[in-house]
Image 1: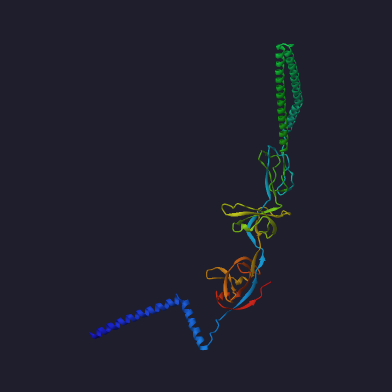
Image 2 (image 1 turned 90 degrees about the vertical axis):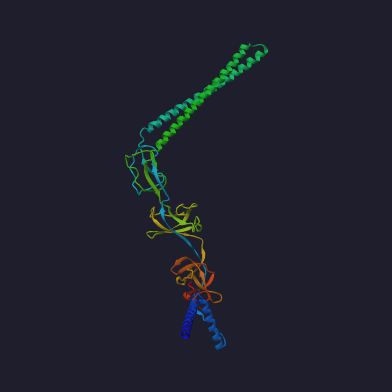
Length: 418
Protein backbone atom coordinates (compact mmCIF):
# COMPACT_ATOMS: atom_id res chain seq x y z
CA UNK A 1 0.00 0.00 0.00
CA UNK A 2 2.76 2.43 0.93
CA UNK A 3 4.59 1.71 -2.36
CA UNK A 4 1.46 2.48 -4.37
CA UNK A 5 0.95 5.74 -2.55
CA UNK A 6 4.58 6.74 -3.11
CA UNK A 7 4.32 5.99 -6.82
CA UNK A 8 1.19 8.05 -7.13
CA UNK A 9 2.86 10.98 -5.35
CA UNK A 10 5.86 10.79 -7.67
CA UNK A 11 3.56 10.69 -10.70
CA UNK A 12 1.65 13.76 -9.49
CA UNK A 13 4.88 15.61 -8.85
CA UNK A 14 6.12 14.84 -12.35
CA UNK A 15 2.92 16.12 -13.86
CA UNK A 16 3.13 19.34 -11.87
CA UNK A 17 6.77 19.77 -12.88
CA UNK A 18 5.88 19.32 -16.54
CA UNK A 19 3.09 21.86 -16.30
CA UNK A 20 5.34 24.40 -14.57
CA UNK A 21 8.05 23.82 -17.16
CA UNK A 22 5.57 24.41 -19.98
CA UNK A 23 4.34 27.60 -18.35
CA UNK A 24 7.90 28.91 -17.91
CA UNK A 25 8.75 28.12 -21.54
CA UNK A 26 5.53 29.78 -22.80
CA UNK A 27 6.20 32.90 -20.73
CA UNK A 28 9.78 33.04 -22.01
CA UNK A 29 8.65 32.73 -25.62
CA UNK A 30 6.04 35.43 -25.08
CA UNK A 31 8.62 37.83 -23.67
CA UNK A 32 11.17 37.07 -26.38
CA UNK A 33 8.74 37.25 -29.33
CA UNK A 34 6.03 39.75 -28.38
CA UNK A 35 7.81 41.91 -25.79
CA UNK A 36 11.26 41.87 -27.33
CA UNK A 37 11.71 45.67 -27.11
CA UNK A 38 10.95 45.62 -23.35
CA UNK A 39 13.36 42.74 -22.74
CA UNK A 40 16.10 44.43 -24.77
CA UNK A 41 15.55 47.70 -22.92
CA UNK A 42 15.78 45.92 -19.54
CA UNK A 43 18.85 44.03 -20.68
CA UNK A 44 20.46 47.27 -21.90
CA UNK A 45 19.73 48.99 -18.60
CA UNK A 46 21.21 46.06 -16.65
CA UNK A 47 24.34 46.02 -18.79
CA UNK A 48 24.74 49.79 -18.47
CA UNK A 49 24.26 49.53 -14.69
CA UNK A 50 26.83 46.75 -14.42
CA UNK A 51 29.27 48.68 -16.59
CA UNK A 52 28.71 51.78 -14.47
CA UNK A 53 29.37 49.84 -11.31
CA UNK A 54 32.55 48.35 -12.77
CA UNK A 55 34.01 51.56 -14.25
CA UNK A 56 32.41 54.24 -12.16
CA UNK A 57 31.03 56.47 -15.07
CA UNK A 58 28.50 55.12 -17.61
CA UNK A 59 29.89 55.24 -21.21
CA UNK A 60 28.12 57.28 -23.89
CA UNK A 61 25.62 55.54 -26.22
CA UNK A 62 27.54 54.33 -29.29
CA UNK A 63 26.99 56.56 -32.36
CA UNK A 64 26.51 55.33 -35.94
CA UNK A 65 28.85 56.85 -38.50
CA UNK A 66 27.07 58.37 -41.52
CA UNK A 67 27.89 60.80 -44.32
CA UNK A 68 25.52 63.76 -44.73
CA UNK A 69 25.06 66.39 -47.41
CA UNK A 70 24.36 70.02 -46.48
CA UNK A 71 21.55 70.83 -48.91
CA UNK A 72 19.73 74.11 -49.47
CA UNK A 73 16.50 74.54 -51.42
CA UNK A 74 16.79 76.22 -54.79
CA UNK A 75 14.08 77.52 -57.16
CA UNK A 76 13.29 75.29 -60.13
CA UNK A 77 10.82 75.48 -62.98
CA UNK A 78 8.33 72.66 -62.99
CA UNK A 79 6.46 71.46 -66.04
CA UNK A 80 3.22 69.62 -66.74
CA UNK A 81 3.97 66.77 -69.13
CA UNK A 82 1.33 65.19 -71.32
CA UNK A 83 1.07 63.46 -74.68
CA UNK A 84 -0.94 64.80 -77.59
CA UNK A 85 -0.82 65.44 -81.29
CA UNK A 86 -0.49 68.22 -83.84
CA UNK A 87 -3.53 69.78 -85.47
CA UNK A 88 -3.94 72.21 -88.34
CA UNK A 89 -4.75 75.74 -87.25
CA UNK A 90 -7.71 75.71 -89.63
CA UNK A 91 -9.16 73.13 -91.99
CA UNK A 92 -12.08 73.88 -94.29
CA UNK A 93 -13.89 71.81 -96.89
CA UNK A 94 -14.71 74.36 -99.60
CA UNK A 95 -18.06 73.43 -101.17
CA UNK A 96 -20.18 74.73 -104.03
CA UNK A 97 -23.17 77.01 -103.33
CA UNK A 98 -24.78 76.51 -106.75
CA UNK A 99 -24.93 73.89 -109.47
CA UNK A 100 -22.80 73.87 -112.57
CA UNK A 101 -20.15 72.05 -114.58
CA UNK A 102 -16.50 72.67 -113.66
CA UNK A 103 -14.68 74.47 -116.48
CA UNK A 104 -11.35 75.19 -114.70
CA UNK A 105 -8.26 73.01 -114.54
CA UNK A 106 -7.93 71.29 -111.16
CA UNK A 107 -5.25 72.20 -108.62
CA UNK A 108 -3.35 69.23 -107.23
CA UNK A 109 -3.06 68.31 -103.58
CA UNK A 110 -0.10 69.83 -101.79
CA UNK A 111 -0.35 73.07 -103.75
CA UNK A 112 -0.05 76.26 -101.74
CA UNK A 113 -2.86 78.77 -102.23
CA UNK A 114 -3.26 82.36 -101.08
CA UNK A 115 -6.41 83.96 -99.76
CA UNK A 116 -8.82 84.51 -102.68
CA UNK A 117 -7.09 82.18 -105.15
CA UNK A 118 -9.49 80.49 -107.59
CA UNK A 119 -10.15 76.85 -106.78
CA UNK A 120 -13.08 75.97 -109.06
CA UNK A 121 -14.95 77.85 -111.84
CA UNK A 122 -18.39 76.68 -112.94
CA UNK A 123 -20.12 77.12 -116.30
CA UNK A 124 -22.43 80.16 -116.24
CA UNK A 125 -25.11 78.61 -118.45
CA UNK A 126 -28.07 80.99 -118.80
CA UNK A 127 -27.19 83.04 -115.73
CA UNK A 128 -25.93 85.99 -117.79
CA UNK A 129 -29.25 86.09 -119.62
CA UNK A 130 -31.07 86.01 -116.29
CA UNK A 131 -28.97 88.94 -115.10
CA UNK A 132 -29.71 90.95 -118.27
CA UNK A 133 -33.43 90.29 -117.88
CA UNK A 134 -33.34 91.38 -114.23
CA UNK A 135 -31.46 94.54 -115.15
CA UNK A 136 -34.03 95.34 -117.87
CA UNK A 137 -36.88 94.96 -115.41
CA UNK A 138 -35.01 97.19 -113.00
CA UNK A 139 -34.62 99.87 -115.66
CA UNK A 140 -38.33 99.64 -116.50
CA UNK A 141 -39.28 99.96 -112.83
CA UNK A 142 -36.96 102.93 -112.43
CA UNK A 143 -38.61 104.61 -115.45
CA UNK A 144 -42.09 104.17 -113.95
CA UNK A 145 -41.19 105.83 -110.71
CA UNK A 146 -41.02 109.49 -111.98
CA UNK A 147 -44.38 109.04 -113.74
CA UNK A 148 -45.96 107.73 -110.54
CA UNK A 149 -44.45 110.56 -108.54
CA UNK A 150 -45.85 113.06 -111.11
CA UNK A 151 -49.34 111.55 -110.75
CA UNK A 152 -49.12 111.95 -106.99
CA UNK A 153 -48.12 115.61 -107.39
CA UNK A 154 -50.97 116.20 -109.93
CA UNK A 155 -53.51 114.63 -107.59
CA UNK A 156 -52.30 116.73 -104.68
CA UNK A 157 -52.61 119.90 -106.83
CA UNK A 158 -56.17 118.95 -107.84
CA UNK A 159 -56.97 118.42 -104.17
CA UNK A 160 -55.63 121.85 -103.30
CA UNK A 161 -57.75 123.48 -106.09
CA UNK A 162 -60.87 121.61 -104.95
CA UNK A 163 -60.40 122.82 -101.40
CA UNK A 164 -60.02 126.42 -102.60
CA UNK A 165 -63.29 126.14 -104.55
CA UNK A 166 -64.92 124.57 -101.54
CA UNK A 167 -63.88 127.44 -99.28
CA UNK A 168 -65.12 130.00 -101.84
CA UNK A 169 -68.49 128.31 -102.22
CA UNK A 170 -68.91 128.10 -98.49
CA UNK A 171 -68.14 131.81 -98.04
CA UNK A 172 -70.55 132.87 -100.82
CA UNK A 173 -73.24 130.63 -99.44
CA UNK A 174 -72.97 132.26 -96.06
CA UNK A 175 -73.48 135.74 -97.71
CA UNK A 176 -76.38 134.48 -99.76
CA UNK A 177 -74.50 134.67 -103.06
CA UNK A 178 -74.20 130.91 -103.72
CA UNK A 179 -76.70 128.12 -103.68
CA UNK A 180 -76.46 124.98 -101.61
CA UNK A 181 -76.07 123.04 -104.82
CA UNK A 182 -72.77 124.77 -105.55
CA UNK A 183 -71.54 124.07 -102.02
CA UNK A 184 -72.42 120.40 -102.34
CA UNK A 185 -70.68 120.25 -105.71
CA UNK A 186 -67.49 121.73 -104.22
CA UNK A 187 -67.58 119.21 -101.38
CA UNK A 188 -67.90 116.37 -103.87
CA UNK A 189 -64.96 117.74 -105.83
CA UNK A 190 -62.81 117.67 -102.68
CA UNK A 191 -63.77 114.08 -101.96
CA UNK A 192 -62.93 113.11 -105.53
CA UNK A 193 -59.56 114.88 -105.28
CA UNK A 194 -58.78 113.03 -102.03
CA UNK A 195 -59.56 109.74 -103.72
CA UNK A 196 -57.29 110.72 -106.59
CA UNK A 197 -54.43 111.44 -104.21
CA UNK A 198 -54.85 108.08 -102.48
CA UNK A 199 -54.93 106.28 -105.84
CA UNK A 200 -51.79 108.11 -107.00
CA UNK A 201 -50.00 107.21 -103.78
CA UNK A 202 -51.03 103.57 -104.16
CA UNK A 203 -49.69 103.61 -107.67
CA UNK A 204 -46.40 105.07 -106.43
CA UNK A 205 -46.14 102.39 -103.75
CA UNK A 206 -46.78 99.70 -106.37
CA UNK A 207 -44.06 101.14 -108.57
CA UNK A 208 -41.68 101.28 -105.56
CA UNK A 209 -42.42 97.65 -104.72
CA UNK A 210 -41.75 96.66 -108.30
CA UNK A 211 -38.52 98.62 -108.21
CA UNK A 212 -37.38 96.85 -105.05
CA UNK A 213 -38.30 93.48 -106.56
CA UNK A 214 -36.30 94.30 -109.67
CA UNK A 215 -33.32 95.37 -107.59
CA UNK A 216 -33.49 92.13 -105.58
CA UNK A 217 -33.65 90.14 -108.81
CA UNK A 218 -30.51 91.88 -110.07
CA UNK A 219 -28.66 91.22 -106.80
CA UNK A 220 -29.73 87.55 -106.88
CA UNK A 221 -28.55 87.16 -110.46
CA UNK A 222 -25.22 88.83 -109.68
CA UNK A 223 -24.76 86.66 -106.57
CA UNK A 224 -25.50 83.57 -108.61
CA UNK A 225 -22.79 84.58 -111.05
CA UNK A 226 -20.35 85.22 -108.20
CA UNK A 227 -20.98 81.72 -106.86
CA UNK A 228 -19.67 80.29 -110.10
CA UNK A 229 -16.15 81.05 -108.87
CA UNK A 230 -15.04 79.28 -105.69
CA UNK A 231 -12.06 80.91 -103.96
CA UNK A 232 -9.70 79.91 -101.13
CA UNK A 233 -10.99 81.35 -97.83
CA UNK A 234 -7.45 81.65 -96.38
CA UNK A 235 -3.85 80.92 -97.27
CA UNK A 236 -2.87 77.29 -96.86
CA UNK A 237 -2.25 73.95 -98.50
CA UNK A 238 -4.61 71.87 -100.57
CA UNK A 239 -5.17 68.60 -98.75
CA UNK A 240 -7.14 67.19 -101.74
CA UNK A 241 -7.27 67.81 -105.47
CA UNK A 242 -9.85 70.36 -106.49
CA UNK A 243 -12.84 69.17 -108.53
CA UNK A 244 -11.87 67.70 -111.89
CA UNK A 245 -12.61 69.47 -115.18
CA UNK A 246 -16.12 68.58 -116.39
CA UNK A 247 -17.40 67.48 -112.97
CA UNK A 248 -21.00 68.49 -112.28
CA UNK A 249 -21.22 70.13 -108.88
CA UNK A 250 -24.43 70.53 -106.93
CA UNK A 251 -24.96 72.82 -103.93
CA UNK A 252 -22.87 71.28 -101.15
CA UNK A 253 -20.54 69.35 -103.48
CA UNK A 254 -16.86 69.38 -102.48
CA UNK A 255 -14.54 71.59 -104.48
CA UNK A 256 -11.42 71.06 -102.32
CA UNK A 257 -10.02 70.97 -98.78
CA UNK A 258 -7.70 73.72 -97.55
CA UNK A 259 -5.66 73.44 -94.34
CA UNK A 260 -3.57 76.05 -92.57
CA UNK A 261 -0.43 74.69 -90.88
CA UNK A 262 1.25 77.95 -89.86
CA UNK A 263 0.98 78.38 -86.97
CA UNK A 264 0.48 74.75 -85.93
CA UNK A 265 -1.63 73.66 -82.97
CA UNK A 266 -0.40 71.13 -80.42
CA UNK A 267 -3.30 69.54 -78.57
CA UNK A 268 -3.11 67.52 -75.36
CA UNK A 269 -5.26 66.58 -72.39
CA UNK A 270 -4.17 67.16 -68.79
CA UNK A 271 -5.65 65.57 -65.62
CA UNK A 272 -7.59 67.67 -63.16
CA UNK A 273 -4.79 67.46 -60.57
CA UNK A 274 -2.52 69.41 -62.96
CA UNK A 275 -4.93 71.79 -64.69
CA UNK A 276 -4.57 74.50 -62.01
CA UNK A 277 -0.82 74.66 -62.74
CA UNK A 278 -1.40 75.79 -66.35
CA UNK A 279 -2.21 79.32 -67.48
CA UNK A 280 -3.04 80.73 -70.90
CA UNK A 281 0.09 82.31 -72.38
CA UNK A 282 2.47 79.99 -70.51
CA UNK A 283 5.51 78.78 -72.42
CA UNK A 284 5.53 75.23 -73.72
CA UNK A 285 7.88 72.83 -75.45
CA UNK A 286 6.90 69.91 -77.67
CA UNK A 287 8.97 66.95 -78.80
CA UNK A 288 7.71 65.17 -81.90
CA UNK A 289 8.07 61.46 -82.51
CA UNK A 290 10.94 62.13 -84.93
CA UNK A 291 12.90 64.00 -82.26
CA UNK A 292 12.22 67.56 -83.43
CA UNK A 293 11.55 70.08 -80.66
CA UNK A 294 9.42 73.18 -81.08
CA UNK A 295 8.52 75.98 -78.68
CA UNK A 296 5.18 77.74 -78.36
CA UNK A 297 2.67 79.17 -75.92
CA UNK A 298 -0.60 77.97 -74.47
CA UNK A 299 -3.42 79.52 -76.52
CA UNK A 300 -6.41 77.69 -75.03
CA UNK A 301 -7.29 75.83 -71.82
CA UNK A 302 -10.67 74.17 -71.60
CA UNK A 303 -13.03 75.14 -68.80
CA UNK A 304 -15.04 71.92 -69.12
CA UNK A 305 -13.66 68.42 -68.56
CA UNK A 306 -14.16 65.56 -70.95
CA UNK A 307 -17.07 63.58 -69.43
CA UNK A 308 -15.39 60.23 -70.06
CA UNK A 309 -11.72 60.82 -69.22
CA UNK A 310 -12.14 63.75 -66.77
CA UNK A 311 -9.27 65.54 -68.50
CA UNK A 312 -9.03 69.09 -69.85
CA UNK A 313 -8.08 70.05 -73.41
CA UNK A 314 -5.07 72.33 -73.75
CA UNK A 315 -3.84 73.86 -77.01
CA UNK A 316 -0.36 75.21 -77.70
CA UNK A 317 0.31 77.44 -80.70
CA UNK A 318 3.75 77.19 -82.30
CA UNK A 319 5.30 78.64 -85.49
CA UNK A 320 5.64 76.38 -88.52
CA UNK A 321 7.13 78.64 -91.17
CA UNK A 322 8.57 75.82 -93.25
CA UNK A 323 5.35 73.76 -93.00
CA UNK A 324 7.47 70.76 -92.01
CA UNK A 325 5.15 69.81 -89.14
CA UNK A 326 2.12 67.91 -90.38
CA UNK A 327 -1.37 67.51 -89.05
CA UNK A 328 -1.79 64.50 -86.75
CA UNK A 329 1.81 63.92 -85.61
CA UNK A 330 2.33 62.52 -82.10
CA UNK A 331 3.90 64.99 -79.67
CA UNK A 332 5.01 65.09 -76.04
CA UNK A 333 4.04 68.41 -74.48
CA UNK A 334 5.90 70.04 -71.60
CA UNK A 335 4.03 73.08 -70.31
CA UNK A 336 5.82 75.42 -67.91
CA UNK A 337 4.19 76.11 -64.56
CA UNK A 338 5.04 78.25 -61.54
CA UNK A 339 8.50 77.62 -60.04
CA UNK A 340 8.99 75.86 -56.70
CA UNK A 341 11.69 75.48 -54.07
CA UNK A 342 13.32 72.05 -54.14
CA UNK A 343 16.45 70.18 -53.01
CA UNK A 344 18.78 68.50 -55.49
CA UNK A 345 19.83 65.17 -53.92
CA UNK A 346 21.51 61.99 -55.11
CA UNK A 347 18.93 59.42 -56.09
CA UNK A 348 20.66 56.91 -53.78
CA UNK A 349 19.71 59.04 -50.76
CA UNK A 350 16.03 58.12 -51.16
CA UNK A 351 14.76 55.42 -48.80
CA UNK A 352 11.52 53.99 -47.41
CA UNK A 353 10.19 54.03 -43.88
CA UNK A 354 8.42 51.10 -42.21
CA UNK A 355 5.12 52.22 -43.77
CA UNK A 356 6.53 52.20 -47.31
CA UNK A 357 6.63 56.00 -47.61
CA UNK A 358 9.32 57.49 -49.84
CA UNK A 359 11.64 59.95 -48.16
CA UNK A 360 15.13 60.70 -46.88
CA UNK A 361 16.83 60.56 -43.50
CA UNK A 362 18.20 63.81 -42.15
CA UNK A 363 20.38 64.80 -39.23
CA UNK A 364 18.28 66.45 -36.56
CA UNK A 365 19.37 69.33 -34.30
CA UNK A 366 20.28 66.80 -31.58
CA UNK A 367 22.53 64.86 -33.97
CA UNK A 368 20.03 62.01 -34.28
CA UNK A 369 18.45 60.50 -37.37
CA UNK A 370 15.03 61.66 -38.54
CA UNK A 371 12.91 60.39 -41.46
CA UNK A 372 11.35 63.05 -43.69
CA UNK A 373 8.84 62.12 -46.44
CA UNK A 374 9.44 63.85 -49.80
CA UNK A 375 7.86 64.21 -53.25
CA UNK A 376 10.04 63.75 -56.32
CA UNK A 377 9.49 66.68 -58.69
CA UNK A 378 12.03 65.98 -61.42
CA UNK A 379 14.69 63.42 -62.30
CA UNK A 380 17.89 64.82 -63.82
CA UNK A 381 21.34 63.40 -64.62
CA UNK A 382 22.70 65.30 -61.57
CA UNK A 383 20.10 63.83 -59.21
CA UNK A 384 16.48 64.24 -58.22
CA UNK A 385 14.68 67.40 -57.17
CA UNK A 386 12.52 66.72 -54.11
CA UNK A 387 10.01 68.75 -52.16
CA UNK A 388 8.93 68.44 -48.53
CA UNK A 389 12.10 69.45 -46.67
CA UNK A 390 13.06 72.58 -44.78
CA UNK A 391 14.97 75.28 -46.71
CA UNK A 392 18.23 73.93 -45.25
CA UNK A 393 18.75 70.29 -44.32
CA UNK A 394 21.59 67.88 -43.57
CA UNK A 395 20.56 64.85 -45.63
CA UNK A 396 22.20 61.49 -44.94
CA UNK A 397 23.56 60.12 -48.20
CA UNK A 398 25.67 57.20 -46.86
CA UNK A 399 24.43 54.94 -44.08
CA UNK A 400 20.77 55.98 -44.16
CA UNK A 401 19.69 52.36 -44.49
CA UNK A 402 21.35 51.37 -41.20
CA UNK A 403 19.78 53.94 -38.89
CA UNK A 404 16.29 54.62 -37.62
CA UNK A 405 14.59 57.58 -35.97
CA UNK A 406 16.31 58.67 -32.77
CA UNK A 407 19.60 56.86 -33.39
CA UNK A 408 22.63 58.93 -32.35
CA UNK A 409 24.89 59.79 -35.27
CA UNK A 410 28.55 60.46 -35.90
CA UNK A 411 28.20 62.77 -38.89
CA UNK A 412 30.77 63.39 -41.59
CA UNK A 413 29.74 66.24 -43.88
CA UNK A 414 30.11 66.24 -47.64
CA UNK A 415 29.98 69.33 -49.80
CA UNK A 416 26.95 69.73 -52.03
CA UNK A 417 27.29 69.88 -55.78
CA UNK A 418 27.09 73.43 -57.21
